Image 1 (spheres, rainbow, N blue to C red):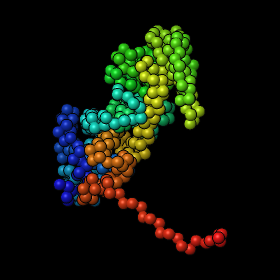
Image 2 (image 1 turned 135 degrees about the vertical axis):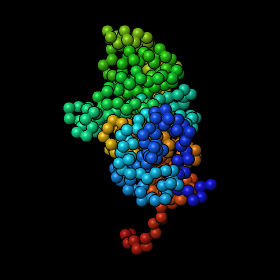
Image 3 (image 1 turned 30 degrees about the horizontal axis):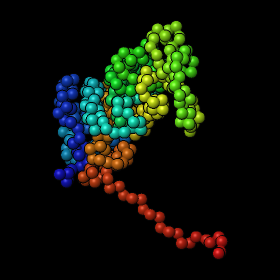
Image 4 (image 1 turned 45 degrees about the horizontal axis):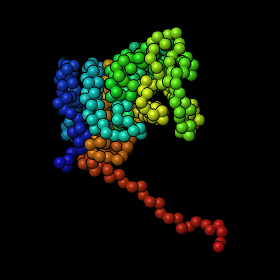
Amino acid sequence: MNAGRTIFSQVTDFLPRREFEQCVARFHGEHRMHSFSCMDQFLAMTFAQLTGRESLRDIAICLGAMGPKLYHAGFRSPVARSTLADANEHRDWRIWESFAQVLIRRARRLYANDAFGVELTNSAYALDATTIDLCLSLFPWARFRRRKGAVKAHTLLDLRGAIPCWVQVTAGDVHDVRLLDALTLEPGAYYIMDRGYIDFGRLYRFTDEAAFFVIRSKNNLDFARRESRDVDRRTGLVCDQTIRLRGPKSSKLYALPLRRVVYIDAQTGRRFIFLTNSFALPALTVARLYQCRWQVELFFKWIKQHLRIKSFFGVSKNAVKTQIWIAVSVYVLVAIIKKKLGLERSLYEILQVLSLSLFEKSPILLALTQFPAPPAEPPIDNQLILFNS
């Protein structure tokens, strides 16, 4: 029963402890730092993400004010600013990456049957990257431009549930298209990308490994039309063609036929040109698949607005990657809680309730479902009558 337990301790019940210990052991996380365990570090950083703490000192002061509640929340040692800083600095960030992957696998199983706006039995993923600006004087290892520092979070988002299933954190000057080389492709799956990922040599690997891509084309593409299919122009479709590339380089890198779909968005009037190696999908489904790519943009916006990944508690590469991966873990953990408790509330609403009630002693389901209704405004009886009947 949850009687007498804090909501924070009930949140940690959703963490797979055995897999966590395996991740710690794999990268020797407890080596030379036994008094402040990896779980203590993870809980402290999770608390910071859920409550929007501003600094290491802020984390230490707020947790210190909780007194004996810390033990019942899972902490086994006090959280000092310097101790937490050392842990973020020296503990291998791959611990948190591997544990985030454990949570991601669990979340994807929970959301495997969710709809995402397109009737498709295959897996569908959106690939994109977001740039996180850094101060170059504080993060000299993250040089992006001459006077600017940054890192990039390249993310493959499972459209069923908007779960990030693959994340790579790189320097800000790494081009997005290079990450296609590191991507493990799933046969039969659809990968939706913007035109920044156009590299026909790399796109050929999708076809070679029986995966499909839907990518926005550049306007100056050199191609020859081989076949045209009828389309219903009332749906916004302009044409559905089979083409071959004609460029001296592109035609050698991708010698097979491609499908070209042109679509005009009725709301904005914008014209979109898509390329895909899938000839079985209806042309309108190709356009709607690309529209679903917007979910990855919403994911980036969500984590930047509601989690701590734009300002960092440490300046080393290890500390930055630690904070980003724990932020991803917190996002996925909230998604797991939402699904397992059958909540209809959005992730934002769940996060806001947790941020204010982590150390309250209440059943978590009660706290997340019984939101007080806004008070009704009393009727105003002293309104002037403008017109007499």
